[in-house]
Amino acid sequence: MEDFEETGGDETPEDNDGGDEEGGNDENEDVPRGSFVNSMGTKKACKEHPDCYDQREPGDWCMLKPDEKWTNRGCFCSSKGECTIERQKGDGFEHTYCTPDENWTCKYD
Image (cartoon, rainbow, N blue to C red; front, side, top):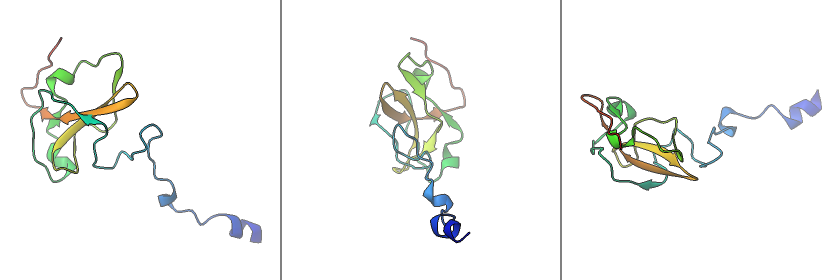
């Protein structure tokens, strides 16, 4: 029993940061990954994530291309105080402004 006490048991939940393996960023971070891309999204100021809950992806981001996929973050309040959404593109990431959910339409290519 003494060996058990010496070798383990002192781990705390903080020892497992839950970061994703690909980007190295924890999904709880407010820093968007990748480069900013212009889109149909509109800049909306925010202080907290709930400020962005009435937002979604811009209409020109609704149809993902084969090399694109959503992250599990949705629209969030970025460290710059802007409602932001990101997607994975190839081996990297892109982010842009969200757009209001009200009267939202998808722009098909």
